[in-house]
Image 1 (cartoon, one colour):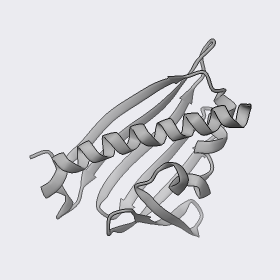
Image 2 (cartoon, helix red, strand yellow):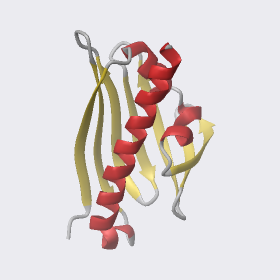
Image 3 (cartoon, rainbow, N blue to C red):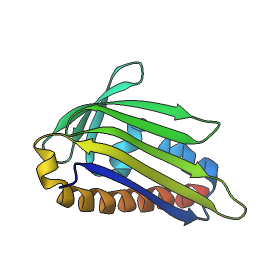
Image 4 (cartoon, rainbow, N blue to C red):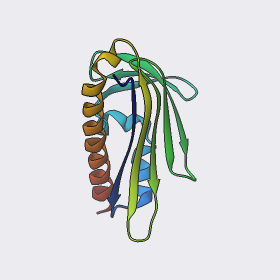
Length: 140
């Protein structure tokens, strides 16, 4: 039974890299796009308490690198531990929105790992679609 979730999802988009970056670098907007997150509350520095849509809470550290357009969320405590890295890869005529998961499920969540992996894959794709749609709308 897999206790980890390692996956990279990439979507091509015509939306501008700056428009996408503005959305993914705004941690206050996380629940608007990532529906698996109910809320995030600032604790101190780069650390936040997080409440997931399923009944669980945790701690996450968020780091944003403007020059590489990369947002790194390190899950420290909760139903899983590890990283989610969201980045915008600028290109000629199109950009790529990329999400990379590298997490390990905690007990008892690893007992449902295959179900959670499917759910997180679908949720990631849906969040990416919402981000791209919002970036395109902001550019109009």
